[in-house]
Length: 256
Image 1 (cartoon, rainbow, N blue to C red):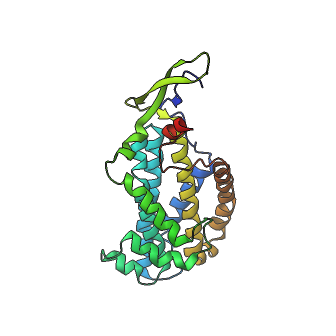
Image 2: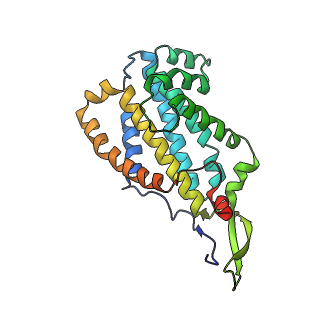
Image 3: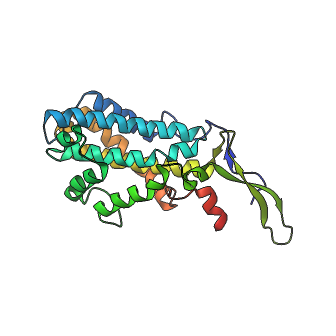
C-alpha cells in the first residue's frame, strides 16, 4: 500500500461532456423538454410525468456535481431521494390514476413502487424480484436520509503514515475531508451507482413512452446509440461491484 492517501483534487474526476452518461442525461433532458405523452395517455400523467422527470434529472445532475467536488456525504444524501423520484415517476407515467393520486399528495414513494413494479418484473436485472429490490433500496438508503453516522462517514479517508518493514502493513489515521478532496473509491462508487440509476430511468422511459418514441424516430435512434454505450460502462462497474454504496468503500477496504 502506498504511503499516499487515495484522494484527488476537486473537479479532476468524473465524466466529461463526451461521456455516454452525460449524453444520456442530455438526451433525457431534451426528451422531456418536449413534454411527451406517456402511454397511459392522460393530461395529468403527461404533466406530472414531465414534472417528476425534471426533478429526477436535477437530482442526478446535482448528485454528480457534489460528488465531483468531493462533497461525498452530500451526494449520498440524495440517493434515497433519487429512488423515491424514480418510483413516483414510474407510477405516474405507467399506472392509470396514479398521476391524480400524486397530485393530491396521497401517493408516497413506497406506495408508488407497489403500483408499478409488479407490472414490469422483467425490466431490470436483479437477483431479487423487482418489488423486493425497490423496497430493499429504499430501506438501505434510509440511513442516508437523515444526519446519521453512516452518512457522515463518507467524508473520511485513510491517510497512511508508516509501513512496517517486516510485515509491509501500513499504519495511518482516518482523516476528515475538510478540503473537499475527492476520495477516489467513494467518488467512483457514487458515479457507478448513478450510472445504474440512469439506466433504470432510460428503461422506464422506453417502457412508459413507447408511443412517443416511435413517433419520433430521430430521438429513438439517438437513444438506441447512446444507451448501449452506457450499458458497457455499467457492465465494467458490475464486474468489480463498483456501485456498492451501502457503506463507504474507502472504509470497507480497510477491513479487507
